Structure formats: C-alpha cells, structure tokens
Length: 186
Image 1 (cartoon, rainbow, N blue to C red):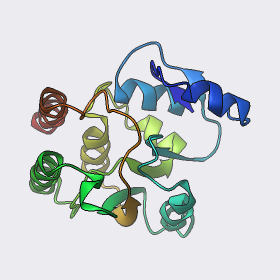
Image 2 (image 1 turned 90 degrees about the vertical axis):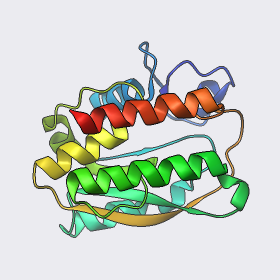
Image 3 (image 1 turned 135 degrees about the vertical axis):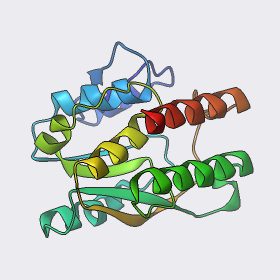
C-alpha cells in the first residue's frame, strides 16, 4: 500500500493487517503509483484505489490476460454498481477523457479506470513522467505508442468511502481532466 498523505488512518490499518506500507513523500496520484512500482518486486503489478470503490477480489480478472499472454496492459473499466457510485459530473468528464484517449491512441476504452495490471519491468520501461492525475492516461498513451496490446476488463465500481481529495469537488475534477488532457497533448 502506498500512503500519499492519507489522514484517515488507513496506512495504520493496512500495516496492522500485515501490508507493507510505502510512504510517497511527493503528493499526487502518479507519485503514489510510481513509488509503489519502485518498491514492488513481483513480475506483475496492479494498481487500484483503496477507497472501497473497487473490489480487490476482481484483481485476478485483470491479471488473467497477462498470464495468458493476451495483453500487455489491462485496464479495469468501471461498471457502476449504483448511480451514486460516481457523480454525473465525473461520469461526463470520464466519457470525454475516454473519447479523447480513443482518438489519440486508437485504443477502444470507455473508461480510464482506477484499476490496472501490467508487467512491472515493462511498465518501468515506459518511463512515465506524470506524477499527478494524468498518470493513468499517460500509461495508456505510452503503452499504445509502444505497440502494446491494451485490454479492458469490466470491474464493479461502488460508492467510495470518505471524501476524495482529487475528485470530491468541481475544481478537483477540473484539475484531473486538465492533467489528463495535458498528457494527451504531449
């Protein structure tokens, strides 16, 4: 687990349950993902939000196409369990980001999901630079540019627990879309 400035006690809970907790000093979603990637030793790594919006029991579904050599990057696309799982503003922003990403890469994704699986060494080789909210988009853009097979797998998306530092406000959602759009323009 990567702690990126959490104030809800989740790092302590994770440590008490036996998880290794890595502290990412630099703030930002991409910074947390990158610290976790650097600390990992497994050949396959997976990323998912730890806000109870995703089911870790579905991680094997994401890893399976990698193990069968059917994919190089697997993106978990959100299937909303409840309408309130995601606000209308975030649904609209996600549709637009996915549309732009399809246009930029040719990869048929309807979501830039917060759950992904990939081979660790391959991901390090992409030399991702974004350390903010553009990290998931940069992962797909660089993977597509490198000729990777990008596969989407549906995952359940529940209403998150707690308040999001990133998308919990209109300004936070705008910043996330801005970061993602900047990655696609590069």
